[in-house]
Image (cartoon, rainbow, N blue to C red; front, side):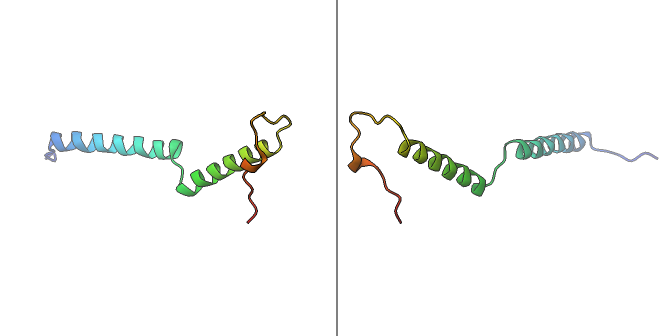
Length: 72
Protein backbone atom coordinates (compact mmCIF):
# COMPACT_ATOMS: atom_id res chain seq x y z
CA UNK A 1 0.00 0.00 0.00
CA UNK A 2 1.04 3.56 -0.64
CA UNK A 3 1.98 5.93 2.15
CA UNK A 4 -0.67 8.50 3.04
CA UNK A 5 0.68 12.04 2.67
CA UNK A 6 -0.84 15.27 3.90
CA UNK A 7 -0.57 17.53 0.84
CA UNK A 8 -0.89 20.72 2.90
CA UNK A 9 2.23 19.79 4.92
CA UNK A 10 4.16 18.80 1.81
CA UNK A 11 3.31 22.14 0.17
CA UNK A 12 4.43 24.05 3.28
CA UNK A 13 7.68 22.06 3.52
CA UNK A 14 8.43 22.70 -0.16
CA UNK A 15 7.83 26.46 0.27
CA UNK A 16 10.05 26.52 3.37
CA UNK A 17 12.86 24.72 1.54
CA UNK A 18 12.66 27.21 -1.35
CA UNK A 19 12.74 30.12 1.11
CA UNK A 20 15.75 28.64 2.93
CA UNK A 21 17.58 28.16 -0.37
CA UNK A 22 16.93 31.79 -1.37
CA UNK A 23 18.11 33.00 2.06
CA UNK A 24 21.35 31.02 1.71
CA UNK A 25 21.98 32.51 -1.73
CA UNK A 26 21.35 36.03 -0.39
CA UNK A 27 23.73 35.48 2.53
CA UNK A 28 26.45 34.55 0.08
CA UNK A 29 25.64 37.41 -2.28
CA UNK A 30 25.00 40.27 0.15
CA UNK A 31 26.19 39.17 3.56
CA UNK A 32 29.19 40.77 5.20
CA UNK A 33 30.30 40.55 8.77
CA UNK A 34 30.47 43.53 11.09
CA UNK A 35 34.28 43.38 10.99
CA UNK A 36 34.30 43.54 7.18
CA UNK A 37 31.98 46.57 7.20
CA UNK A 38 34.11 48.31 9.85
CA UNK A 39 37.32 47.59 7.90
CA UNK A 40 35.84 49.13 4.74
CA UNK A 41 34.61 52.17 6.67
CA UNK A 42 38.05 52.70 8.24
CA UNK A 43 39.77 52.33 4.86
CA UNK A 44 37.41 54.89 3.29
CA UNK A 45 37.94 57.42 6.07
CA UNK A 46 41.71 56.94 5.88
CA UNK A 47 41.65 57.53 2.13
CA UNK A 48 39.51 60.66 2.56
CA UNK A 49 41.93 62.02 5.18
CA UNK A 50 44.89 61.29 2.91
CA UNK A 51 43.28 63.10 -0.02
CA UNK A 52 42.32 66.08 2.13
CA UNK A 53 45.81 66.50 3.60
CA UNK A 54 47.52 66.17 0.22
CA UNK A 55 45.22 68.52 -1.67
CA UNK A 56 47.17 70.81 -4.01
CA UNK A 57 44.76 73.75 -3.98
CA UNK A 58 43.32 74.66 -0.63
CA UNK A 59 39.96 76.50 -0.49
CA UNK A 60 40.12 80.22 0.41
CA UNK A 61 38.14 79.75 3.61
CA UNK A 62 40.42 76.92 4.69
CA UNK A 63 42.00 77.64 8.05
CA UNK A 64 44.95 75.60 9.26
CA UNK A 65 43.47 75.52 12.78
CA UNK A 66 40.56 73.45 11.42
CA UNK A 67 42.80 70.68 10.09
CA UNK A 68 42.35 67.55 12.19
CA UNK A 69 45.59 66.06 13.38
CA UNK A 70 45.87 62.36 14.11
CA UNK A 71 48.81 62.56 16.49
CA UNK A 72 48.10 59.95 19.12
